[in-house]
Amino acid sequence: MRQTLSALALFLPTVAVAQETVGTLSGTLDGVQVDYTIVDGEDIRTGWREAEDGIEVEIEAYPADAPMDMDNADRLRLRFVADTASRNPEAMEADAELRRDGQTVTATDDAVALSLGSVEVTDDSLLLTGNIRTTMAEGSENVEVLSDEGITLSADMQATVIRADESGS
View 1 (cartoon, rainbow, N blue to C red):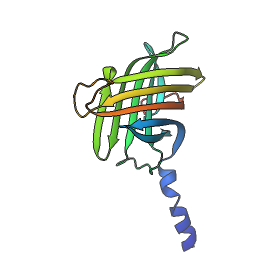
View 2: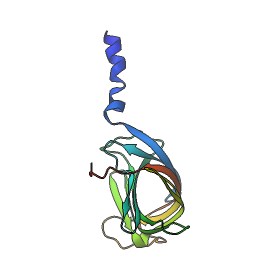
View 3: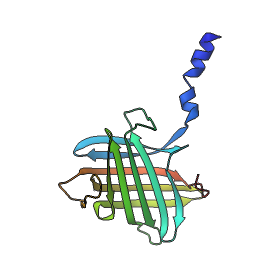
């Protein structure tokens, strides 16, 4: 009985906060090769919704080589609005947030260059491919994509994102 309970206890963290891998983001962070896993699930912001100007997408990603700890984890969040009215989808606004080693850095519009390869909607799924280049800094520092200040991310991404719950939960 004790062995059975011990074995079941190993699975409790997985059941308590279920996440699903929905994509990858691979490239360099300040010149060092990095790989992130894009996840979706309980308490994760990954999702998409229709917006006035196109489709709003939020992506939450964690380092692929480290266990995900929701409270203390290094994490990358991207949010953007894509104009999907033309054959060549375009990001109209974007922001990024990176938390690593207890430090949080951010970037907005002028500091984020997002090139979308494809944005395809099928039912509640959004297939997305693209490349991001951004320079993120602490606080309200005004940085641009190609800036010597801050932390630079250059990466390719691909994901299949599920429509966000409209109820806000």
